[in-house]
Length: 226
Ligand SMILES: C[S@@+](CC[C@H](N)C(=O)[O-])C[C@H]1O[C@@H](n2cnc3c(N)ncnc32)[C@H](O)[C@@H]1O
Image 1 (cartoon, rainbow, N blue to C red):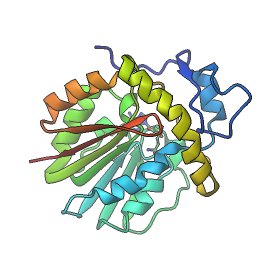
Image 2 (cartoon, helix red, strand yellow; image 1 turned 90 degrees about the vertical axis):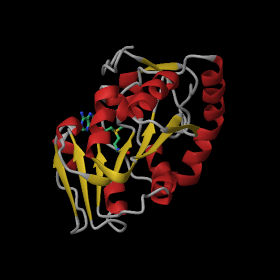
Image 3 (cartoon, rainbow, N blue to C red; image 1 turned 135 degrees about the horizontal axis):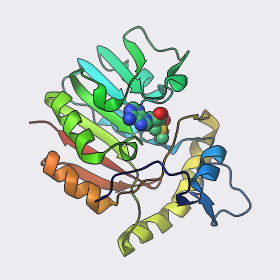
Image 4 (cartoon, helix red, strand yellow; image 1 turned 45 degrees about the horizontal axis):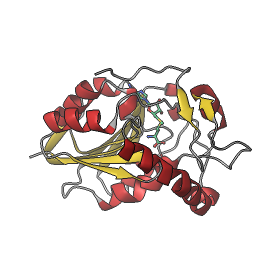
């Protein structure tokens, strides 16, 4: 099973609603085009799910691949301390966070902080899947929770039917939330693994992992460490 490679030549179907609609919303775009024209992130739509799914223990939270720290700021009001980590130092430079939060630049796999909550929002497909999940499982305190919003490569009929539904739903989410959104300068990448592949590896590393197809061309993973 191949792990993800950032390949700017990957073809991505234009995801309607990721930005104000252009003239040819269904044509295939190169990943580079999608990157340069995406000015709103549907990832923020899932912050509510994260905040509703927090573990009981609220000592420390870790947001891996935090981008410009929007989730970190929200988690700071729920946890004693929060750390956001991103491998791109430019994206966290100058970003202000509450006093109980901090941001630093690092590869997610090099982080050595234990946490009650680890979040990854649209990040897992940038990383080698198995090592990333093993690392998260190691860092979590017993009873801690992993909440992840992911993207997968559609492969089978069910995947494509779900994608088609998102073609309708995504612009609606954008319309409802666009006014409140801020541009996201975060690096994006095309997912290379299918939902089935993510489920298979995920369930091996994190027995009992719950995986759900979600709106916005995304899925969620939730796991509580025994
Ligand atoms: C699509 S953005 C999502 C950002 C943020 N989580 C959000 O929801 O807006 C993916 C982020 O993952 C970061 N990233 C990619 N590879 C990483 C790695 N190995 N370690 C840490 N962060 C990484 C990128 O720099 C980028 O900010």
